[in-house]
Amino acid sequence: MSSFTLREPVPPPEVLTRGTRRPRHPAALAVALLTATVVLLPIATIVAVALSSSGADWPHLMRYVLPQASVTTAVLLFLVALGTGFVGVGSAWLVVAYDFPLRPMLAWALVLPLAVPPYLAAYAFAEFFDYVGPLQSAIRAVFGFQTRGEYWFPEIRSTGGAALVMTSVTFPYVYLTARVVFIMQGRNIADVARTLGAAPARVFWRVLLPVARPAIAAGIALVLMETVNDIGAVQHLGVRTLTLSVFSTWLNRGSLEGAAQIALVMLFLVLTLLAAERVARRKQRFHAPRATQMKARPPRLQLSGWRAAGAAGLGLLPIIFGFGIPLLVFGRYALNRLDQIADPKLAESFLTSLFTALATAILTVSMALVLLYAARLVRTRRMALLVRIATVGYGLPGTILALGLLISLARFDNFVDALARDYAGVSTGLIFTGSAAAVVLACSIRFLALAEGAVQAGLEKLPPHLDEAARSLGRSAASSAARVLLPLTKPAILTAGILVFVDTVKELSATILLRPFGFNTLATFVYENASRGVVEDGAMAALVIIVTSIVPVILLSGTLMRDRDA
Image (cartoon, rainbow, N blue to C red; front, side):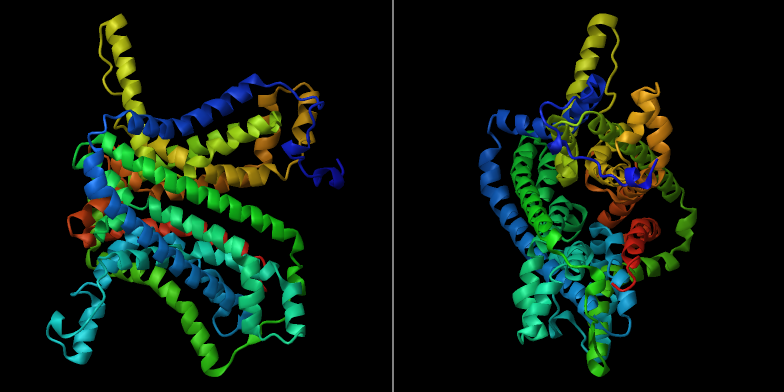
């Protein structure tokens, strides 16, 4: 086969006309429909429960919960959007437009905070900025203060503190998108602006920043979805958001309907963010064809003296906050508590995390493979829509997913138990509710978009004629997929598995709501210790999570470093 044929792009579904002959694969369509149904089941359950309740909880929710939680959530989202926009765009512009010592290192190290989950950052910040923490202790030692009343220090356990935590570990989402756009877009128009006499600062504010706005908005939308999803950080810092209200209404007040009603409000907020992110990406694609070649960009502005030192210091600050402080706090605790290595509970949590993450990775990648191969066989708009629906779970907060899934599984278990009692005279009890299978299923639904994106990137490089040729030689669809496509997409499948594995190890929101009694992952192990006020007892587990999470960061940094000039 010629190299020209191998590089031929896969035609999108939109180019197929009504008269095009398409193969019929009812099994593929059924699998895609089943996957989309499973993903939509928690959402439909939340809506049904919220709308069918008696309304007895509404007066309490409207008076004591929703107004305060909504305002707090809105303020937190505004502060995080402002902070990540400022830090992400500023750091991206710094490493793209200027040359100074440490710039090559900063270009990839600014991604490191992504390795720290927000709840771990919250535990570390609370310890670091506490009255007895190292920072305030140093301030008292230097200035001779004896009590807390003699000086002012911001309170970390506040909405502002939560915004600082979320900004410190999520700004790389904005940094990555802004950096790519600054490198690839707008060089011609920037050159034109400079030839007309515009200063570099004016070119940035009046030309490059407006051009990059859709990409920045997409990055901020991802950050806000992470903020809405978080439960561990806001609970530890005492910030009552909508997510925490769902958790407390369900577990503390025992009101499933009330929790579903708050979740419905959150669902509206998340769908708004998803729509904003999609619109931003659509505008981003509009600008892409106008991008200039990366090799054509002019040299960066060389900084020297105090300007170079200042630029290096500004670039280091986000890394110190987002990665350095958590690593310092948990590293120091772990060194002081080396006996934790022999803790059987830590070993049990590690093995539970390992098996849960492995099971989730295998299930999720398998679902993504089946879904994408079905879309490859049946190139219709209906199939494309089913794939899009099946991957919507990544935008759902773990709390909503867990609540909807728990109700669905409980009803399914009751249905099976009733059938078994009627026809066999035995009780099956709860099969899926409160089991490890529920945790694996919730994580698979949530991270299916990650696996789909990675596998899709591998499949798109293979022309459709490749497996069609195998089928024309007598192979079935399943056989041609197993013998032809799978070997060629191994790197993409491995990448997808790693991404899902790592995100499952970090996952907290859905796990703490769905896990059975005595089921502890590394994340819940740290969460339980932090809830009891003994963060140091979970330090070793926290370090394992951070080290594990660095894997995708290294993969991402490797992609960035392929363009060494960037």
